[in-house]
Image (cartoon, rainbow, N blue to C red; front, side, top):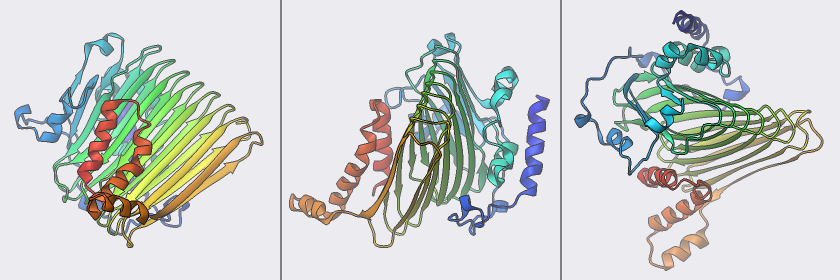
Amino acid sequence: MAWLGDLRRSAAQTAESLGLPSRTDEQWRRTDLARLDLNAFQTAAPSSPELPRSQWPATLQVALDEQASPAEGVLLHSNNSVLYLTQKAASAQKGVLFMDLESASLKHPELVQRALGQYVKPAENKFTALNAAHWRGGTFIHVPANVQVEVPFHVLTWSDRPGLALYPRLLILAEKNASVSLIDEYQSADQESSGFSSGVSEIWLDEGAELRYYYIQQWGKSVFNFMTQRIHLSKDSKLTNVGLNVGGQLSRVQTDVLLKESGASSKQYGLILGDGEQRFEVLTLQDHQAPHTESDLLYKSALKDKSRSFYSGLIQIEKEAQQSNAYQVNRNLLLSPKTRADSIPKLEIRANDVRCSHGSATGPIDEDQCFYLMSRGFSRPDAERLIVEGFFEEILSRIPQAAIHERLRQALIQKAI
């Protein structure tokens, strides 16, 4: 595996040469990194976990509960180590590969080398370089042509070690007419312990392939979270991408969807629920590079106390992408006078035969709605909670899988606005 060692060493040199992103960079001008001290976090070498399953905390036990979370396979990462991996025989017999990325690099180097680092380059910024140099374990999914996997795979990245730096890495390759679903979840044991996570996800969908991807971020409130997701869509491929962000003191997620060939389509939905002094930043790119492509995006945030959100979305339609459709909407609900939501939807259209629109709305709770509920016997907090649940229902109702719908709903309830 000398090739992987070479990639790591090169990325480490790149990371050493790069400073933290500056506010002079347009992509980072809203990101306040003043409180981030990378020297305060330790990158622990992976080790074989010795904790017996009977002593696992409740969160890890729930991940294996088939009734609570039915899964085709489960992969648990704990503090930069692979804690547990299982896959049902049905998908394995069809040739579906579901394993940690390091094992895949040894057993299937031809597949991993084809895509690893091809979509997210280490030199993009300090965080992508650190990930390329230090990721351990990781997740790898390869679905052969014409194979349909209806039950989702479930990956949980877990940390209970304060001051630890984590570098999650995900690589998905779906071949022609393949179909797969993934729940990709992140949690901390202690909500107050500091931590740092810099993740990278690279996803390739071949002709006619379909992916349903659910990103659930529930880090503790003292964790710095940076995530870069880049998704390549080939001819007639389909993406449904749902992101839930409720954790971290600073969480910045960048999702780039590249609609490379005709017929490609994507649906992106996002939920943010903030309180305290949390800050959430979401940057999206809907890049239409071919004709007859479609993208639809809806992101919603509800903010309490002094929490803040920032959304920056770009629809880019190239000259060749005639007869493409693209939509982008960001809506923000302010539950306190000290919250703030900034939204910058953008369009760059170089074609002349397209349908394209975007919009943004930010405001407080409708007092008439609140009064109506309180007149029916609800307290003010309960009335606000019901309004927030209704606000998010527009997105939750678009998720056809009942188990995932309920999982996202429970994550919102646990946040307890």
